[in-house]
Image (tube, rainbow, N blue to C red; front, side, top):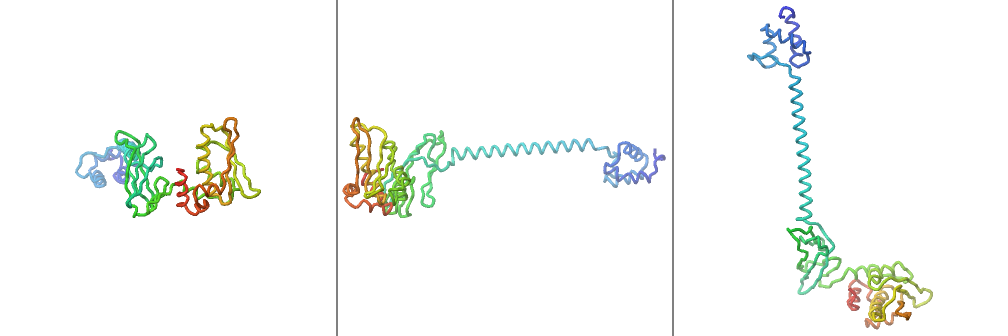
Length: 318
């Protein structure tokens, strides 16, 4: 074999052989030649760093393929593990937020009492599936955090104390001033939506909605009198009022009418009608009646949220 292939040819092929660029037949020829030719063997070993080793270079394509498969499997395993880790971490974060950390909630009731420069707040979360976790006061607003109720925590009640010298605080929509004055969310909204003209029915309806006339007394249709003074608004209730409930119904409407007369600038009278048994009832509450009830000019209560709150307190409207 050695005499058949000149050493010069083998030497030219060795770099390709070392880099696995020769075909299998050529590989066999070169291997046989290297077994018989010490000079070419030394050159081969110098190229591969195998000087002094007796074993000749074996074909490696299959070994390389197996190695690449092994690397691929490792990479796939890493991807699977990373995906599972991400899922587990995400699930842990969600569970921690639901049952340990909590999130802001607004469905809770509070009672407040200001005395001695301090505000005592007691509250209860309305949703029975939630539990109180913690609270913080952020930019003058009380923020209550709740978690899902569990064996870890199922307490819905909470109590906290606030030093009023820290400034005004908004609690569940109600504003507590530094002097202890409490202005309810209802009073704030009524002042915000006071109506300059009784002819603006949308404004009238907004005030009636804030006062909750419909939930408390039932549905009604509207009729305006804007042709001459005193301008008026008539609420025609659509359901029958039992004779035994007439006094309570009229008393509530007088309170609502007082607020409406205070907050609708040019309104001079509020009328309401309803059926009670065989009787068709119609009552009108005038600006004069409202002034007598609060013993002062009712229109002066529209100048500020604090004054609106005073009016609600006088009329016992919560």
